[in-house]
Amino acid sequence: MRRMTMLAIATAVTALAVPAAAHYWPRPGDDPLGDTLRGYGLAPITPPSNLMNVGSLYYVDAAVKDFKAICHAEKADLEGVVKFSRSWEMQQQLERKGQFATDVKVDFGWLLNGDVDNNYVQKVHFSLTDIVLEEIPLGPNWLIFAKLMEKPECNNAAMQYINAGGYVCQGQKILQATAEFKLDRDVQNKLATGAKVTADELKDIVKRAIETQSDQSVVEQSGRLFSGSALKYGVSMNPICMAPPNGRFQRVLPRTVLGRVVNFVLFSILEPILPAKDERPAQVARAIAG
Image (cartoon, rainbow, N blue to C red; front, side):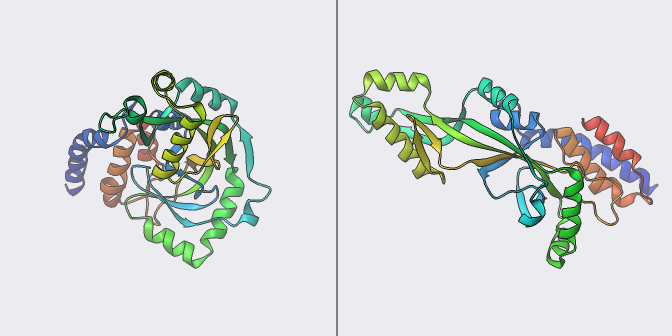
């Protein structure tokens, strides 16, 4: 009777959780760069940085948006096993998608009208160039994982956060790229005809705005503005993350709203009431979640 009651509750929770999760999960078109990265099996790193590495252990929140380092892999253990490759297919795909908006805004009203109260605010956009994929095979990654878990501080932290509502996973693939910053062509044309400013002066204005409103340095190369260093924009974890010692289902990061809801039902509702470990429900759930 208790089990039937819990199953009924699980069904009701699922019915309520799907629209709630859909509300918070990015909708197609809201995040063009994120949509593209997720299409290649990568979770967006927001904001882009150089803090993440393959082989390292991370706590990943339930929404797969926040990554907190638990323990970093030793550089010596990564030497010779990490592979680097340019991705021309992804480069072309991102170019077809066009430019992505930044949070950097520039007010050009004073250039066009000479009146600071008459605003002409435009966002700076960027595209990704020099895309490189960094990947470690699953076999060597498992050896690194075993070595990390031999360290008391890593083991203790991983076991502490394994039941914190998210996931404990190991980085397996990372996308690194350089950003090129631009204004929309229509904006450039309007400024070129309506403002008494040279192309070099316009680039200086945009460069200062980016460096002032973000953490990125900007360099000019052949008349184009690039980020001062390549950053990491996407990450893929091992296909299976850590499960609690008493866990009955494999921990797999969700890729869809339904996948997130299914994981919640499996881990938070069904798992506590099941008397024995059984992998079949997880296989069915992953097939449903896609």
